Figure (cartoon, rainbow, N blue to C red):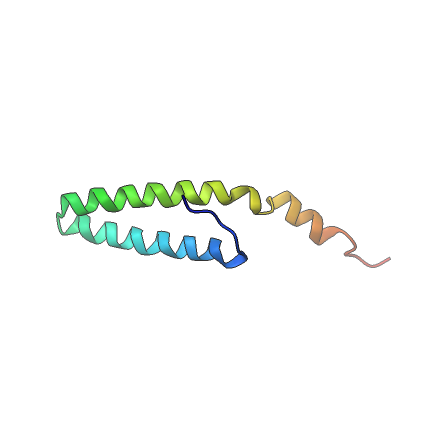
Length: 74
């Protein structure tokens, strides 16, 4: 399985998702049933890989806390 190991890997994973999504939409409009199915399975796989990488991302409240710490004038 895919494991996000470097900072840029997550962005690459998102880019792959966009490419596969586009290909899936085009295959669907062209009535390519088997290709559509395979691309949908690829999308599911990419979403699972991205979900596995989620803990490595800072949560929105953690990002807000980092920004607010020390910010401000006294």
